Image (cartoon, rainbow, N blue to C red):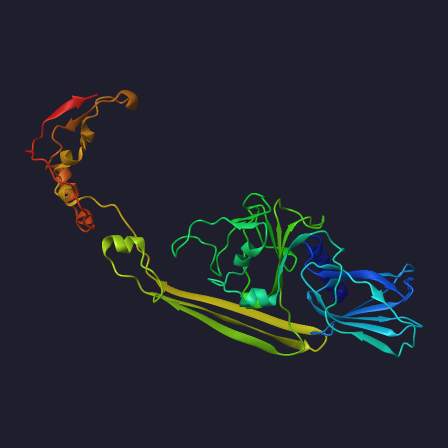
Length: 401
């Protein structure tokens, strides 16, 4: 009894998750006909994933139509079996993220035991969906150069997408590193931050359009930038959709490791360092990790893992404003046109009409001098100061409005 309850709860959670997600999987549909273009009813249409041997099977309707939904992006073999016709096998049909492929299939009269094989990706009509955009397949995703190996930096290669980030550098937020999050993209004229990011169908962006996780480049199967005319299954955005799918384990154990190293040899010095005559700081960066996957049970269960780490040692220059040397002895304020008021001479409790005394020559030596010569101020960096006009120390005070 308890086992049935647990299974029912898990199924309910799975359907709930699907209901709140936008599907990243593909669909194949079309019409099965004979040589005379007449519909073939009750034909069996199979889609076989060549990496995992996962098979999905449907039958054509009385009008000869079929539809196979929920296919993970991969390469498929399509097989059609019908009584009185030769078996048709279409090999190497590539399905991408969120594809809706219209694939018509034509059978030849003959024995079922006879097989007609059509190899290679054939010309197909993309009439199943009106959405437009660009798919970044595994070759583009993993082989195009990426500074910081941030997958979503490839978005700007899509027509209609503009990257709007303007602050760069190690201390600035650039959105170009593998662990950065960002929302500085405009898709098809929409405002920045109005885009939706999906990972295997689940939203990974917040209400401001910022993605919350950028997967390891080696773990990304592919992703699609959908710029316009997507269907009603996508929501919660006003710009575009970035739909990413991760790799899966296959029937063969395989993986790889990587370590990308960078140092300061080809780095330019910072503006702040050049202005003050400081040398270029050291820079040592390692971006490392790997992926590994394979079968737990062949043709049934699969495992895929991914890890990425980042270690960086770098010096950050900074500019600070410090008191000039001439002010450190508690004198010479008048040289900088600074008036020092005595806080003990307030003559009114009403702050809007209060009157205070200021030191006439601003060169006091008493209480101010002891504060300026405190250990905290004496340890601060020194700065430069303009020439000082000659003055004599006085302690006269007069009321000032």
